[in-house]
Image (cartoon, rainbow, N blue to C red; front, top):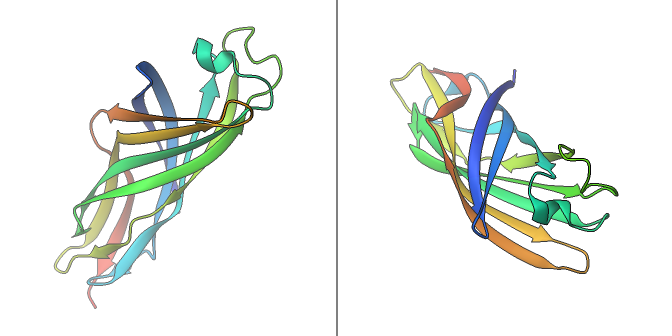
Length: 168
């Protein structure tokens, strides 16, 4: 089944550091995978939240929709390519009264697009890890209609999915 793993990326958008604590849920499909055959991560979900800790975000008008895309670097063992990316997309709507009191948040559920990976021959398992390193794109809807780009840094690789590899 799918496993949920905690991950923190620190993204910088318009020179503002934005820490993003998240939970990534992923599973290798099919599992087991036959050596030499393709597999994907399904489901591939990133759950986080948009908080009012940043004054710019807190000041957004109620009803403003944030469309967010996060592309994360992935490291793969027991399959190729050894380096890949996974892109997560989702939306959050700013509620009324979001600016105050501090500490409010809105859930952000992001669905991932999995890379297609090919299980190696001569191995018994495969795994996919992410670091939180990547890029972020935030489109601010409503009357503002802004698109903001940023980069993200993460720590050590965190395994988000493992699977068995069987001979053909």
